[in-house]
Length: 380
Image (tube, rainbow, N blue to C red; front, side, top):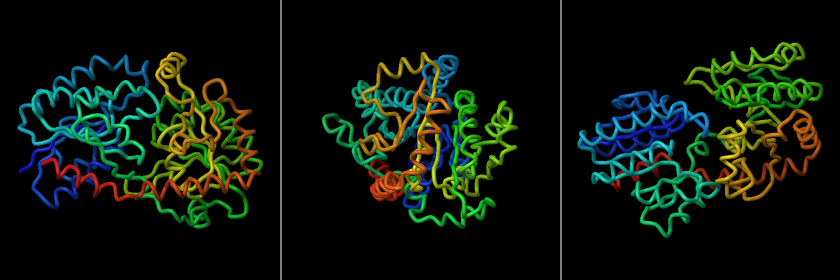
């Protein structure tokens, strides 16, 4: 029996870890334990805690939760050390998992980490710490393994799970019919984020854009969760948005296509908060505008550690300023509306985005779960 300890940081990490370990379990007997979510529990993992404990983002926001997170990490070090593990796998959540992996590696345990930290974009000083913590780094993007070439950490490109899940060819008319949208008028998807803090920072601004864009577009606002849906409906501008026909898409059950994916499949354009949703839009071939705001102190700290000026994953991965970005004080309704209207009228720019996004989709669709399973199997 191969005993694997793991900590999956968020829902996306829970899902890809479950898919990979399910494949690994077909070839050998494994026992899983640690922190995970419903997908890992469904394949038989003994979850000591929910991965929701790690769903904290940003410098300032983490401070309030820091004592509890440090206590949890100390507890996990002891529990994993007592569990006679063959391997520890950290999935995302690098600020938590790399420290945990380093302590376990000091005790002689082999360690792997799935989802390389974005050392190519900011905080490159983490590389030496990663080398001390991780035997094998499983990278989602093709340019990342080269960053580890001068370290003792073996880095393997495994592809991106989203590129495997999202079809490259999408029937937009069918997607619009599903949402009761007309095929004769353009659709704008507005995604202000999946976290409560993002709705606070971006919700009113994004709704103002939605209201103004309603004259030329059908507008859908998918809610990532019931909590986010309630937040959006509580915003001062929501009643006006609803009155002009802005459509809020309720969150869907886990076994159904998410509201965000339904919106992206139906849309011609999108306005999105910076984050994973921008990569999902890329994989849907969806031209977009990216915006983001964080607390001033968080932004100042992030800027000090940043190696690049771009924030959006599409521009970072393509290494060009293809997608318009509006950060902090630039993230206001007027410039966002201007950028969206300009993009809506610029067919060559839309075609350029779709071509670049399609090429990126091809690079990332590598059968991620199978590659992760293969790499982990080689470590057992």
